[in-house]
Structure formats: C-alpha cells, structure tokens
Image (tube, rainbow, N blue to C red):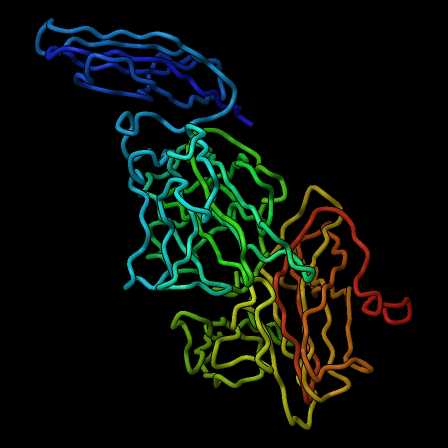
Length: 502
C-alpha cells in the first residue's frame, strides 16, 4: 500500500489584495511540482482550518506557496501544521473542485442522485444531520449532531421494501495514469437482529467507465458489505479498478455508491468523508473485498452466461426495472437463432416470472435471483449456468458459497457444481471435475426455501465454474454466489461426492 497522510493547517487570508495560497507536492527525483490544494481571494479576518490528503510511492516534499494579488493590502498567514497517518477529504471543498472528495458539510460536492427518468435506482440518498432517530447520532467529520452525512432513509410517503436501491454518482474523473484509491467512512448498525438472521441491507461501491452509457453490465464492483457492522463510524478503502483486468481505468469514469434496503430493516446505513488518493491500496475491511464471479443477481447476471453441453454461450437479458425481453437473439459462427422467453435456460426472476412466489434470498425482494424451471418434459434437460473465466490464483484453493432452493414435482431433479479446467489451446479438451451434487430425492420441494451450500475449487489452472441442472419436472433457484480464499467443507453434507461418484 501507498499509505497516505493527512496534512492539516490553519489559514488566515485577509485584505482586498490577497492572491493565492497553494500546497504543492514535489517527489524525489522529479523537479515537477503538482498542485494538490489551492485557495484564492480573501476569507475574512479570522482563522480557518484546511486539510489535504497526500500520497506518493516515492519520498516527497510539501511546499506552501503564497502569491500576492492585485496589491499589497492584506496578509496570508499559516499556523498549526500537522501531519497524521491516514487520508482525509480536501477542505475547504473549493480548494480542489471536482476532486470527488467530500465531507458533506456544505453540499454533496458534485455527487448526485440519478433522476427518476434514469430508472437506475428506486429512491435517493439523503444529506442530513442527526435531527431524528433515522440515522447515526453524529457525523464523522466534526463528531457532533450538527454535522452532515449521507443517509439511506425511507419515508411514510414512499416506504421502501427489501431490495430497493439508492445510487449516489460521482463527478466524472479523468482516465487514471496511476493506481488510485477511494477512502470513506461508513456506519452500518442494525438495532435488532431477527432470529432468522440480519437483514439491514447492503452498501456497495462500483466503478463505471464513461463508454458504458451507464449499462449495468459494465459496472465493476470494488467494495461491498452486508448487514450489521457495529454502532460506530468505520474506515473503508477500495481500489479504483475495472474488470476483467483489475487495472486502473484507462478512460474517464465515475464512481457509484449504492445502498440496498434490507427486508426487515431496523437500523442505519450511512457514509461520510469521501477522499481519493493516488497509489495502491488493499480493501478495508478485508471482508469487503470483491471477487470476479460473485453475484447476488440484483440487476443482472454479473458475467454468468447460459451454456450447453456443446459450450455454446447464450447471453441473459431478463431482469427487473424494465430490462426484460420476450426473446433472446444468439449469434453463432454460422447462423443466428431465437430462444423463447420460456426456453429451458437459467434466467433472472422478476415480479411476473418467478417459481412458487419465492422471494430473493439477499434482501427478501420479490425478484433478484437466477433460476431454471423445467416441467412436463419427456427427456431430461440440462440447463447450464457458466461463470466468467478465472485465471491462476495466488492460493491453491478457493471456496465457492451460494444459496439454492429446489422446487417442483420431480424426485430426480439435480443441481451440480462443476469445475471446467480451460485448455492451453483449442486443440486440447476441457477437463471437467464435478465438485458438488444435490438431488431432490427424499427432499421436500412443495414449499421452496433457501439452503446454504459451499464447496472447494482448485485454482492451479485457469477455469470456469458451472451450475448444471438435470430435470424433467422441476427446477432450482440460485442466489448470493460468493468466493473466499482457502478451503472449506462441503455443505450440505449430502451434496459431497463419494469416491465412486467422483
């Protein structure tokens, strides 16, 4: 990590001849100086607090530079310079416009809620101080009830339900010429936790390249936490990268902070003191780290695609917020054909198309998971859901966890998890390894419910993961696919394969 520091100092700029006060950074071995903080003009006959985050992969010097204005009537003074580990938002906000830094004390610094016509989210983040019981008692910046922060709030006029989301979108940033990191403080507190488990909701951060025209499929998740984290402000960091390479954006981009309402939420989700700095950083807390292939199926399939035994990939389009389509057009090498909406594939649940009124596992929403349903077929059907490609990892094993719900009348409906090792060339065959298998035989599917599952995947070669169904009269629903580094036991135990099966 390039550990940033926060420089704070007091300024006094009084008189009609005041020019400009700047903070410059000069890195070792480079005579070029970059301006990281700048204020011009008088600010009254009093002292003001100033802050600026500083980071560099090389040793550096900081320079305070004052310039005379139109005349010599006035003074520029500085005092109380402090340097402390950690980052901080630039203050005052006018010292670096469009930097993305914000403490929300004056306004939202160019961060905006999407309009109703955009149809990207369901409600808005609210900039507020602690005037009621609907948010934290103090902000993070000044630590008092009069300080401002961004809060995820509902209202009696427009009550929220599980799965509703709110976006806050940053100003557009230029293409990154070096590694870049975002820091902020979050507050995720659930007053009461139901015996069935926490249900506060989720806080997530995405990077969106400007060329995407805000298409959901181009969102790169870089940070995510769910449910209760404690009754206090906590620090977060997220690297600014784009998938699949995981490198800094080479084109202009925006950052999106998303809050998702939980099913039975009684608590707060809030954030404060956003700042950006140049340099590498690891995700804080570590459990907020995102991985390629993770998916809660809230708005899309996260790069998972339909496949077949012949490995023909079929994009998925059906979802919520008006993104459904009555058919799917699939391009192949020799022809183009169409699949009906009811074709035998994995698809996203929607309010109008979902099995047995099953609710989403993540947030108790009426939609937000993937499923296949096959009924009254004479021949066994094999719908396949295939992950994005995984490259070699630094660890030998990775644990995949997910939630599944079987349904239907068939007693032989089966779901398998298969690791497909990718060959070095097209001439070599793929290597299939069945990791996990669950059959509905002797299992009550009359009222579908969510069940937890996990299994180990080897990461010694490039691979994909497939969820493969087998059914003539039934189906499976799938939600909250997550990956963790290291090993784990197979769950449920009945899904573990015996040596004979392997």
